[in-house]
Length: 248
Ligand SMILES: Cc1cc2nc3c(=O)[nH]c(=O)nc-3n(C[C@H](O)[C@H](O)[C@H](O)COP(=O)(O)OP(=O)(O)OC[C@H]3O[C@@H](n4cnc5c(N)ncnc54)[C@H](O)[C@@H]3O)c2cc1C
Image (cartoon, rainbow, N blue to C red; front, side, top):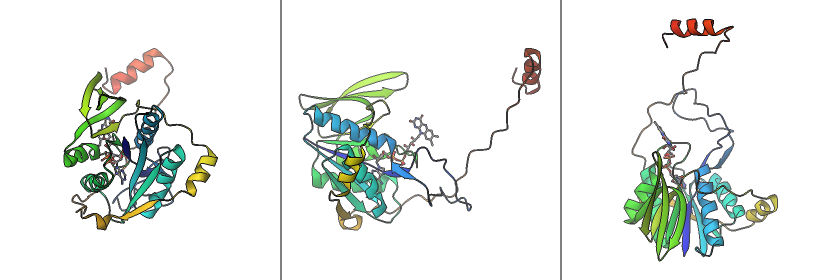
């Protein structure tokens, strides 16, 4: 059974995001970029399914500019079998990503498509759901556990205040939540070996898909700066300050 995993290049989660001076978006110039953390979890889970003999081949795909090759190299170093770059300089929005991933899924015919539950840059949380709808397949979102039994994917989903278990007919789209798997440490020799592996590149324009942006960002802003805290000398002073702040 083949698994296709979508991996996105995003600003590294340790970087403090800065907004461009003109407020048009996030400033990524000179900023460290990495694989989206939820996508790294999805890759890890695919590798574990392969180690359990439930998956035979793992293909990772990313969409974007040639610079996105680095997240494919990371996936190769983790252990995926093949990688595909769908290359475009056009800004990609969730619907466009879902349409392009659909085109790749139709070429690859995977039984499982794994994605992150969200990308930590745009915070839309839409691609997995839209991809399943476009493909006409079952979807298991916010997965914290995956099993394959009798031709079905058994997915434990993180829901408000607990979990829900669903059985999905294959092929299916599954999005990874934080607790699904802890990504393995990538060793330097694996990274070096990954540099020599081929990356299949497809021009996004060749896939017959309209992925033009449909939403214009009109403004981006940093969160308001919080006022500095103060130290109080006694409980009585604390109570007085809370009263002054009309909190009690
Ligand atoms: C008001 C608000 C409240 C929120 N509340 C919560 C909350 O309660 N809990 C919570 O967990 N999050 C919350 N979020 C976070 C938010 O849901 C996610 O950060 C968001 O889903 C990421 O969106 P996206 O469009 O970047 O990616 P998505 O469309 O979500 O992308 C999902 C997946 O698609 C694939 N993908 C996307 N682009 C590419 C690409 N170029 N190449 C290859 N693969 C790709 C990746 O596998 C990616 O992980 C909140 C956000 C907001 C704004």
